[in-house]
Amino acid sequence: MGVKNNLKLIFSYFKLNLKKEWKYKSSFFMQIIMMILNDLFFIIQWYVIFQLVDDIGGYGFNETMLLWAVAAGGYGFSHAFFAGAWNLKDIVYEGKLDVFLTQPKNVLINVCCSSTDVSAIGDMIYAFVVLAIIGAPWYWYLIMVPAMICSGLIFLCVYLAYVSLCFYVKRGDAVANSVQSTLNKAGNYPPAIYNTVVKGILYTFIPAFFYTFIPAQYFFLTPNVWWILGMIAVTIFWVVLAFVLFKLGLKRYNSGNLMSGRL
Image 1 (cartoon, rainbow, N blue to C red):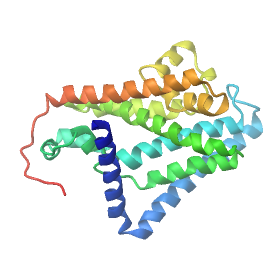
Image 2: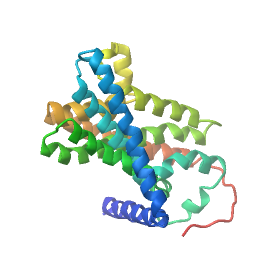
Image 3: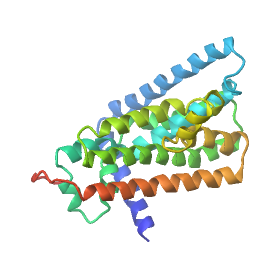
Image 4: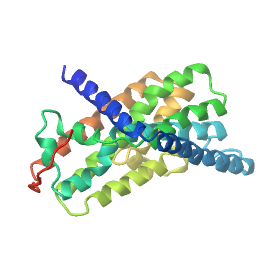
């Protein structure tokens, strides 16, 4: 019942945030279109690269584009639905968490859903544009939805797990930003180009491969039910870890005693 209520809350927040952004229709569409155009430049970049080399770590142009599609879809999903997560550090440091604590809903979900990045919708659309460009079969379009959800939740929750350091140290968000940057960049390339030690890190502490490679490889290219179940398990692990670390950090939160409210 709790999961159902939280899902309803997430979608209610998303609809409300979209309604607020929709007031400025030109800006709304421009943000989405500009993000799609920005992402399309990477296709040109990789097309040029693959005119010079046959493959990178066993991946050709289509496979590499699929990695980028999953990454864009996951990034877009996390920022479209949970953009407020990237304001958490400021909310904690400035003592503005009080208003969320007074509401009868889960604090972390409330914070994460408090804002929406409209341009992130362009990233999600781009994921499907890439599928069209590489000539993907029709059922890949359906698979992209659970793939981007799992990828997006990992991207979000890994950041939340590390940004919880903000409850303990000043500039704790620097660690979270570094991890997020590594997650975003390292995950866009096949594991074959990394050595064993780096692979170990990118499967565990900074799960970049679960952000892009695992869903791209085992949801699309070579479907494998065990890897799919593993992907789901890892996603659940990071979601739970994010909530646990946030709850532990919350015990160290110092109120800013600010008089404010939210509609």
